[in-house]
Length: 72
Image (cartoon, rainbow, N blue to C red; front, top):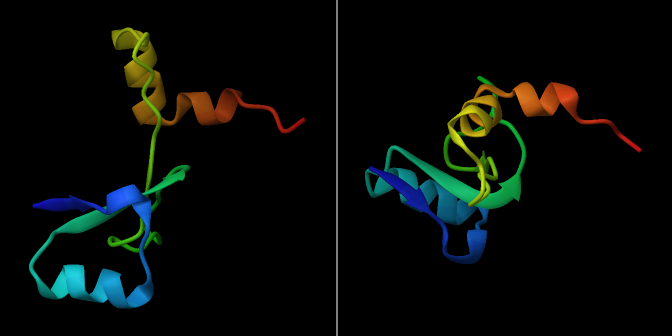
């Protein structure tokens, strides 16, 4: 069972306790993408907008929107 930290706040100690309590992973409120090196108890979230359709949802979770973003 995953955990979403209240207000996304966590520390290394809280992450360790979540793991010890048997959670499978935990999410912060930090935006961004996760890869194989990301700690399972400090995962970032992907924003899904309330006006996203199925295509936009699929693009976001697949990381396509990440490739399309520009750093201005």
